[in-house]
Image 1 (cartoon, rainbow, N blue to C red):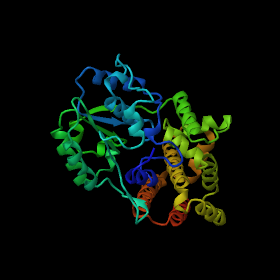
Image 2 (image 1 turned 60 degrees about the vertical axis):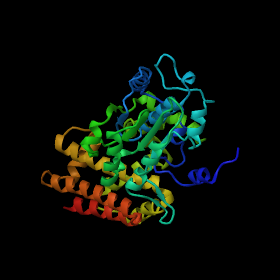
Image 3 (image 1 turned 90 degrees about the vertical axis):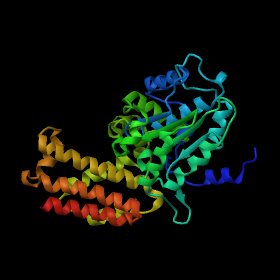
Image 4 (image 1 turned 120 degrees about the vertical axis):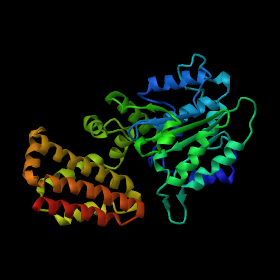
Length: 373
């Protein structure tokens, strides 16, 4: 089937809401671990009293966007293609609406997300007002009788102030048969007035069984090899219920990275600088973004864990010994400040597209300084 230039461009451009190398949420047919939430949405729609705004919340990577697209397919499908009992949002694979959504070509669906700047070769740091202004023409479209229009905002956390206020206007005066689905990992950042216009549906992190099933399904769809059997327990523990994090850790060599970080911390206050440069080189390029993200996620988690263990005195023997050696009682504020500094510098580096190698080496130098006191 021939495809228009608009669709071709959409396929070529990177997507801010896609984990590189894996299926996008709109391409994911199965939802794991959220049957109760799905049933609640299906029954709300079947009742004929569907609220116009839904806020799907929960940690990043647990299936919120997959549920959003699943709901969009259900709402935009023909009545005879929906589950008549209102227990599921599933629709047949041959459903016309499902095929159009998969191809990013359904006239009744608008997705708002951070755009990609083709000149700067990077994503916008926020979801700007120009994107939200597309709502005016989209919501002004007239369809056939009984046809819905669906807006997915992924993520609403990315809205800048002007964009949030523009979205609020549409939420306050929604047209008939318009459905807004806002995806958020940090709902506290949203305008209180936006939260108040939506029904909130909190999704929980996936349990171990569903996390592994979801990760295995994504790996199969991406035609990637699965982790070794003995790697799953540690991946599942590190993923904290997030399939996105599990896949990111595996694809970026996260378990090996964790070993390098542990070795780095055990050596402090000494630093093997040649090894540190080799480590920083392995995540310096844009193509190594997943590895860079995994490194900082793991490093920040380990620092937080060490501070918690040092404060509580509770932990495994090895990490307790490391925490006591590195963090003297009067140095706890300094290590807490270090964690906050690394979070801030990482955020600045990502938003300003700063040199990643320098950031990694700077983080290691800060660790050395904190350990030396």
